[in-house]
Length: 157
Image (cartoon, rainbow, N blue to C red; front, side, top):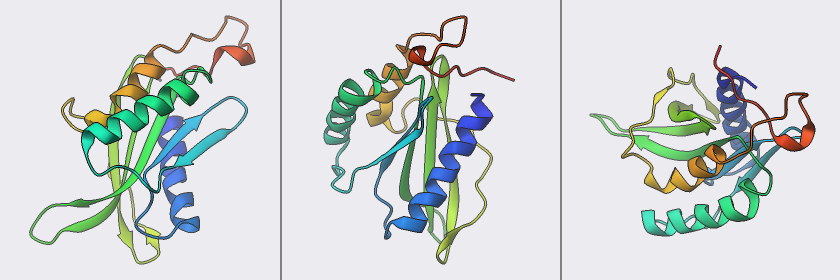
């Protein structure tokens, strides 16, 4: 899987979540695994960064590391500040050996508008996601023969 494919998978997960969940979108983790993409929603996501960090650290220990997931995505609803605040779906994604990236799309009624171009996530933003990034950074590289049990490679173009 290329980083562009990870971006597309996570954007599609945001569209799919909006189609099946009520707003506000529940914060969700996207794990693209060789056998299937797994999306886990957290309807009772803590409202504070330490609580969020603890929840995602447990999730990383119980799910991400055992799956040897080399990439993740995070989808949530947010608001872009400005003269007129805009409600958006925020997508953050990261992969083994790659700094996390962020993008967002405005809500346009019952659908999402166009996503902005992804950009590198500021290291001080979303500190509660660091357990996910650490877990994917520790994922074992796939074996040279592309074995299923070794994870999904993420490569630059």
